[in-house]
Length: 164
Image (cartoon, rainbow, N blue to C red; front, top):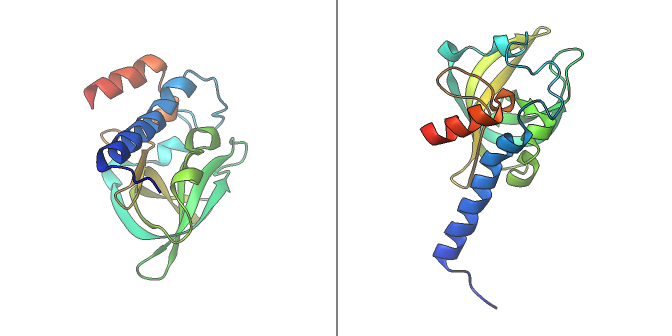
């Protein structure tokens, strides 16, 4: 049985993470359905940078969400907080967040950053980023202003990467 060196594992992990971050460059410019998820939509106006918070918990399940009537499907997750309560987390349009299904599984410890919002009388957490331990992290919104990555043009995404 062949062992993988630490450097090889590090390089493979880096390539994987870079490919996840670049998915927005390939998919931006409106090539995918973002109905209701647009930068200035009623849904995105619910994201309040000034109410930025962190949640820690255990992943219960990854779910498909349609936050408001008429929106394109998105992905989210249900997590169990340390208090025992469950929280529903919204991430992004399904095509943008599809890699969540590869990097997370039920029982994983997760850290989510974002803000709370109320939609149809239910409290949900709108995520800007999610992390699975120290292994996998996915960003959905810019921390400084809450602009969703899926709404950026290719040029804006490249500029964003250069500023990182």
